[in-house]
Length: 125
Image 1 (cartoon, one colour):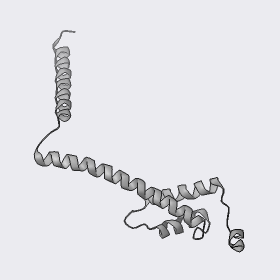
Image 2 (cartoon, rainbow, N blue to C red):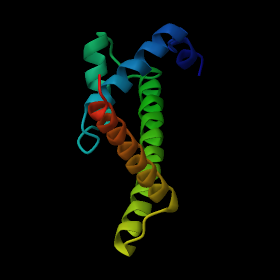
Image 3 (cartoon, rainbow, N blue to C red):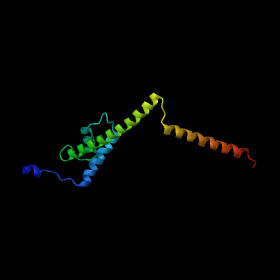
Image 4 (cartoon, rainbow, N blue to C red):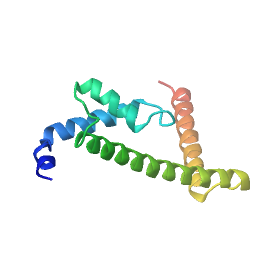
């Protein structure tokens, strides 16, 4: 057990942050259907010129990947909820009251602006 403790690598917060940012950048530019933790780790290793396949680096990469995936899932859930509401409204042929008010207000503003332009054009200079 003493040998294991002696081999532990101490990572400063700056390096940990840099690893997480690099992994996040890789995940952002990758297809989430094709990227894996291993691919992200290998690409980050290459970019940072550091072997991230060993502990504790491996754990930092895993944390970054897990965090990114959790946020992506939350975003997808939110967007799916919005889409579901819109789809239901479209299927039912209903328009929300707010959407109707907004459309009516836009039409009134447009009509008012058009009338003002017509008045300005018809008034003697």
